[in-house]
Every structure is written in structure tokens, then in C-alpha cells.
Length: 324
Image 1 (tube, rainbow, N blue to C red):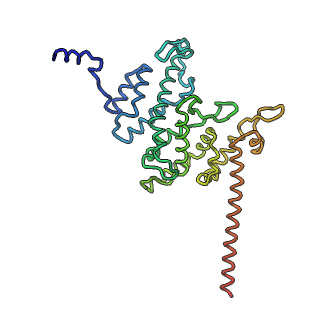
Image 2: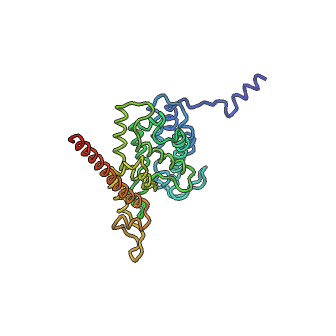
């Protein structure tokens, strides 16, 4: 019996099972692996392995963002391999990959990284707290300069991706991707965090002021992101109205609108608008936002002047009564 059990232990496929101890061990296994199948398996568990510091936690998220970059665009993974017959169909565990087969393999790995980010990073951060101004301490990780810069890079809007839309969201998931809703919700939450940040539950005056400054410098890029996600109307809300009051942001939004081609009646079907009103006529939500903002700003300034005039009147009446 003992000999039989010993033999079973030695021959069972799981007899020599081990586990990935920590992030450093995970990286070493990644470095040695070469196949798409191995790397997809590693990505599946990578955000769950042990880390020993905040720096490792940030490094791990950045690593996934780097891999997920360009996930929806196979051209991002060609790498100019002219010396290999990459344009021949290859038979893989993912099926037959035609065209640039190796680029398609890389894209599979990239899409897996995005899927894991969605489930293990974007989604949990969405669910931590749904209040606008009071973010839980976990969000302090995103205030790290390196991670913040990488997230802004990942959510970047680029020119020239679409001839009608002069800005396009490079890493926005395709329409059929299950991660799209999670991704979109995280971006909205992330941007609200940047635009309303004062301090987290743990108040640290000097570092929080530095974070505020860093976030404010990124406001024009946030305008790009909100334009691409068709969420510019957020600027009309009380908590975010101040963003377009920043001249950089107003100028950025106007530049985007006026630089895009719209469909107009007549012979010249597609052209750039001559005015914001023309852009509204052509159906631009962003143009509507900008015009409404300017109307609201005008009313805000008008009421401010009325209040100042009333205050001056009160002061004058007080001075007259004191003289009498």
C-alpha cells in the first residue's frame, strides 16, 4: 500500500506543484516564458500575487497598462517584422490567425491584460466609494506621480485616428468588448477624482497641495478625454463648472470643436464649422456644452456685479446714516 501511494505521488501530474511566491518571482517566470499561452496564463494571476511594497504595487499596474496599450488595434503589434513571414496564417490554440499572425498573438495577450485590469483594478476602484468628493484612502495610490502619468498616457486622446473626429481615444475598448462599461465607469470616476480633489480622508496639507497642482496641470488633457467619451456636459455641473473657467480648458475645447469636420447641407458636405453655432447645428454635443457654459458664465458674472452693487449701496447708505 505504501509503495502504491508513493508511486501515485511520484507519477501524478500535479505531484510537483508549486506556486508563484511574489511579484518578483512572477516577473522572472514572465521573462523566461515566450508563448502567448504562457503569458496569458501569467497575466490571469499577476495582479493577485504578493507584493511587498507600494512601489511594487504601482510597478505591477504600470506593467499591465504597458501591455494593454493598443489592445484594440492590431497595427500596434506589428513591430515591422519584414524578415519573417508574418503574413502567413498560423494555427494556434486561439484558432487560425490570418494576416499578421504574430501581431495577432501579441494582441491576444494585450487584450487579456486589459481584461484583468478591468476586473482587478478598474472595477474594484469603481466600487470602493460612489461619493464624488470623499474618496477612500485607497485612491491615494492614484496620486502617485508615476502611476498618475501612466494612467493619463493610457487614457490619451490622439489626433488623426479618424478623419471626421480629429481626436480619438486610442485605448477605448471596442463596442463588443465586455470590459467597455467597466472601463468607461472608471474613467468617469478617475476624472471626477482629478477635478474635485482637495484631500483624501487622511489629510496631508503639503503633499495634497502638490497633488492639486499636478492634477490641475492635466486639466486640458482631461478635456480631450471627456470629448472623446462624449461626456463634456459634465462641465455644466456645479462641481466641475470651474474647469472651463480655466482659459486653457475653454480654448482646448473650442479648438477641438472648430478643428473637426461636420456634415452640412449643400455641395460641400463635410467641412469645419465657421462658428460654434454652426457646430451645434451640425449636431455637436461639445459645442452645445461650450455655448451653454458661456451663457451661464455671463449670468454668473451678471449676478456677481448685482451683488457687488447691492453691497456698495448698503455701505453708502450706512455712511450717510452715520453722517446724519
